[in-house]
Image (cartoon, rainbow, N blue to C red; front, top):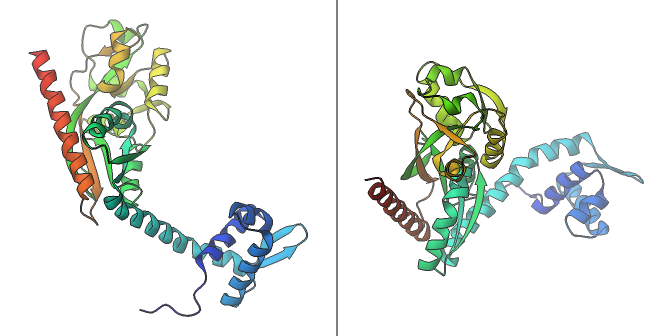
Length: 313
């Protein structure tokens, strides 16, 4: 259906949002890199278009009227929609421009993505890749919001809202400082012992945390939170200092276990395995670059798994 006329100018609505946040037309003009007179003119034009007085102007600044407050609130989803349109069309253009926007959970981004990108750069020198990082929940949101064409997450459950492709498997390891009482025990930990012990954990939404929580829930147990930290690096540092145990990806703790800063504690009756998945939006098919990227990543992980198996044998 045709839009009603007149249609408010989106940049003027965006400017009004900035006035609401910053408290003056001058500061809003600076944020938008235009002059104050130009900002004043755009806002008066917006008032004229809507037939409403949006601002109370004074020598000390500008304050939104009641109508101005309402317009700011109503325009928020409009501006967010325009941002989504811009991101989406940029992602579509990337098919032709040889650019791929990728999002990855912290574990994948820190311990897997750098190697993947380095090797793919040798095979596809014309493909540029940008990387965004977050926990698994945030990565899913980036993909759904068109901030990334493809994402990588880890966990025990496949996301129902996204297309996905299995890339690899991983497992969590319970680790403690060498001074911790668990470091010297011979018997494996039970699920009950873990549930009664305060762990150092990532924030809710982390794929690593979700695996431990799900494994305990399957046995009717709950996870006891001792400390929440925003990165694997911070958790490892806390565990080394004796704050408490943690369950982290084997990928993330190999170095610390090899040099003795962390000790792995065997677990008897919990499944701490997880799957690393590539995910993308259900609303669009994979671009040629994204599909090629995932195929190469899958091949690399398969070769890596095969080499590890040969070494273990």
